[in-house]
Image (cartoon, rainbow, N blue to C red; front, side):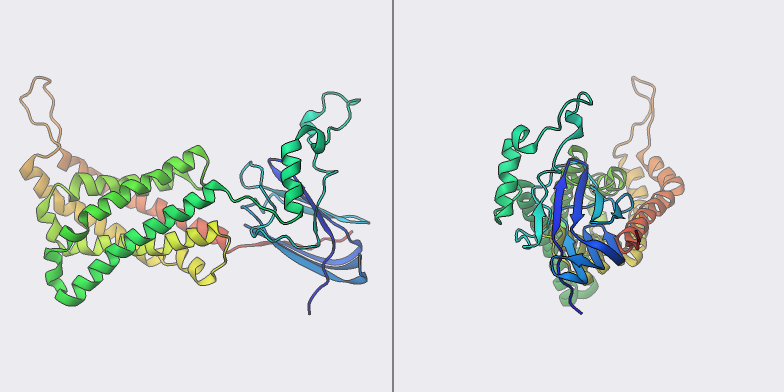
Length: 367
């Protein structure tokens, strides 16, 4: 049964979104928070009398739904929605079109930081933040200003998707045409492409560090830098490895994961919900990650005799510094002591992300 929409007033500061739902004598409230979503249903007295009211909001950005709360009062419902990241949102909703029942609460858009004493009057946004006030006024009439970051992320994610699509397409065509013989020549076609794609991926770590992108730095660093080291120190300098079937499978697994990840990021930037893509993003890793880690370990193990033979990245005695170093020994130690714990760490990170993405928190509060 469709619900009537109550009037909803919103305001914000850098940390919190404030919602005031204009509804009296509320009964049976059902309030749900998700990462970028808010849903409200209740019976109460609003603009259309004593009726069932409801609405939903797709937020402009992510929220901390565990820290967000709603209080049912006698004449209204107040919600304090904590932002996942401190910032001024250019608008409340993901889409530029603003519902007619959503209003800006200018009287509440005030900063407590501006209070220097108990006698000092609250400073009004219209006086102290004239530029912001004008922007909000434009939004009230349906005008929006697109974020430069949004354009960049769409272009970047689309370019990376096209790059990894090229890799998967070349591998698939070669294997369907030549079978196992494709292992002998595939690296000539995609080796340099994979190297440069992973160099570009390093920018994702930088964006997290400067605050342009949300995410955990350590898992991203381990995965991207780990791949870069494997490609540039082990795979690329050793032509004998380029004909191995395990390398063919490793590149195919790496690229297949990205064919899901980058389209999912595009939908997130554009605030488009694609349930199947979300499910694939947070479930395919259950199969692909173990296969990928196994292939990486085999590639490293295969490189050990090549490294011992070529002495690449190693230092032998005698020398002026009376120092020796064996890169092959480092790979052996890494495989024995670090490979499995790192794989468990990354898979645990993905599992926690999966649980967070597919969980929601609901509150049902009475007066």
